[in-house]
View 1 (cartoon, rainbow, N blue to C red):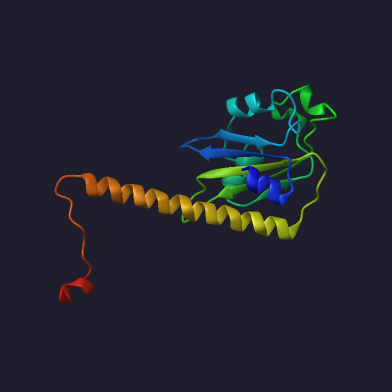
View 2 (cartoon, rainbow, N blue to C red):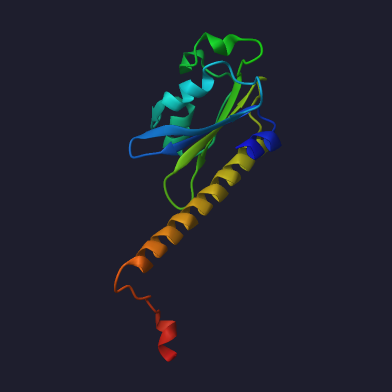
Length: 163
């Protein structure tokens, strides 16, 4: 999260993981003094459904979603108005490989930023690569679990019949 935020020039990042019905925050990174007091706690207790808030919209539509102003009704309270910690821009993008998004990354900034097509495309690619990595790790885990079961034998394709 830090690498992504730092390299793309954002002050904070939140990782949301998709469950059956909701997104839940599992990791938060921000530069010192970039997030308002209570920001982390608010994120960790927040749940989003498909289509709700920027993370929910990015999840429902499986695409990056950009907002120039972070809504004040987002549950972060009046601390968001503090001069040292005001978050003013947010970009949410899905982590998706072959199927539905398995998570969302939100990037936050203290300056009002307008939609940047190059950045939009970059985060879409980053989300796809992370999603492909997650898919590969899940497949490796499933294979390992299958190998642990008694009586498991690898399936040989038709190409192996000549051996």
